[in-house]
Length: 266
Image (cartoon, rainbow, N blue to C red; front, side, top):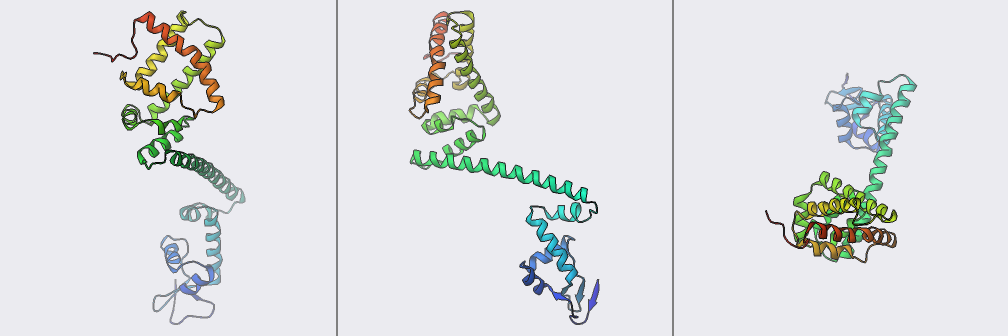
């Protein structure tokens, strides 16, 4: 690197470059440290001096950074390239990255709006419930809004029983059994039939998995299941499912001698 006693004509100080290109002096120092843009010369006093060629390179760096490229990508993957096809490939990869970020941000925005609605309807500040709602939104649980109806004891029970992975698995099981109930109802399968009783057992096992055998939770779940917040489509689907689930459970309890509201004993 050239050293100059004074600032020659055609050279700019770091402060002048920063002002001209609307960046900070610290940014230029960082680019130098990262090996992206080093000054063409230093004055005897150690001041960085830049040429028009350096400013052109800085413009390239800032333009690529505007497109979302990291400094490492600009230094290691882009600037060394000399084949247009390679540059186009890097740009395609960056476009895919940005599309993915947009999709994630769009999803986050939707979750924020949904959470805002729940916060206003709850009319109380409860960050534990907020966190549970967010987790259920991440799980794509369409019933996330039921969270606000659970009391603290029930939510503590749910948190202790399920993590995110097992919660997703349980939700999928619930939705599958709901669809199966509608299928059996539409097919006219008798609830007392082996197929009907087998379904009822699977449904009851799912409830026991959720409650861990705590019969005191059943009235709470039944009350929440009657919420007026179900939209018309969900109400119709739930009514179809319940038309088979309720008598099937009744037949299963009668056939097995089970009292659902009695605590399980070990």
